[in-house]
Length: 450
Image 1 (cartoon, rainbow, N blue to C red):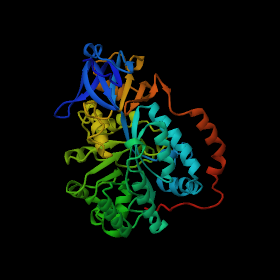
Image 2: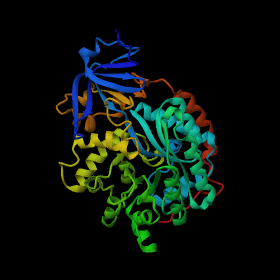
Image 3: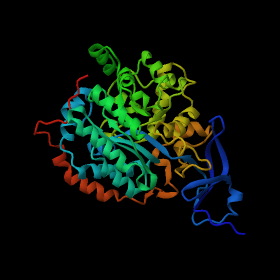
Image 4: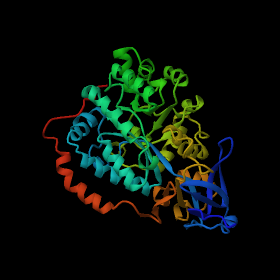
């Protein structure tokens, strides 16, 4: 009997794989067989030539990687790219970003999310964890453009109980939307903008409804030291005593995590992960970075992230991967850490685990959703290839991604975006910019005081 056609076969290519010890390796002259949005097998190109398929992608000379995951961003903030440059953190928030965000409309959020999704698909990101406002608009964009997302409606205690309730209602309403491509979280902003009663209530809601929590905590060393001076506890200790560490929690940044915090993170009852976005830390001149090595030693996944483009200027996870590897070498004084293969592990399985999708995406293996990117290494900046892992981490760029696939659906083919009209988005966003950027009203949505 002739087998039924696969939905998609990608061949011939070199495939990044993980062995049973999760070590990164590469299978050459391979093919990926996809059926119903799931990887059915990774086989030889010769075997794949005999199999029927509804669609084939000629990936000759290309590298197939698991789609990248942006583990913490504020996608609609691409509208503010370059608007608050060369400022300390406090001025960045109080004088520019939070006044502008008091003008946000749902349409602004929608257009920003659409432009951000285009940028991420273009750069090989197949899933992003977003923490922002008017998140139903972001969910609608995700549904339409085909990307995968982990979404949370951010709130401050200054909003009253309504902020927390709105975050819960969003998480329950959108959980499992877009054919399962959307997962959700409760999204308190941070321990310095959400008080302990609200965090305690959030932890209880997370337990009751089986929801994870995504928040900023110990973003930098100043926040940790200010919390100690004012309250006698670090932000991580606040998460412990409010029950947040008893939930599945994704902590954004953590460059202010102290040695005293590590045992608390190690003994957390829930699944704990940290997202690192190193470019922003360099721009803000923060004195420390995410303690990736210490967290790894505790078995805590560290996923790669960009943060929002208002601080990072791009949503380029390739850059985050390279910077994470380089900064870890510098801060530890050890050129053997992080290796290129370790960086690829952070970019694949660890990032998937950070957003709670460790059993769904993050590797190209039977049973995983077919979130796959194809990378072309024929450019002069990637030749010759002596060490494939090093070439991918330290030489390749986001513009080397040729094809982006989510759930077996091609969202970009040969650098052509298929689900978003970028020109139309840029034109409409540009028309709205004067009203969005107006700060003459003197309002701000919050105050940064750490």
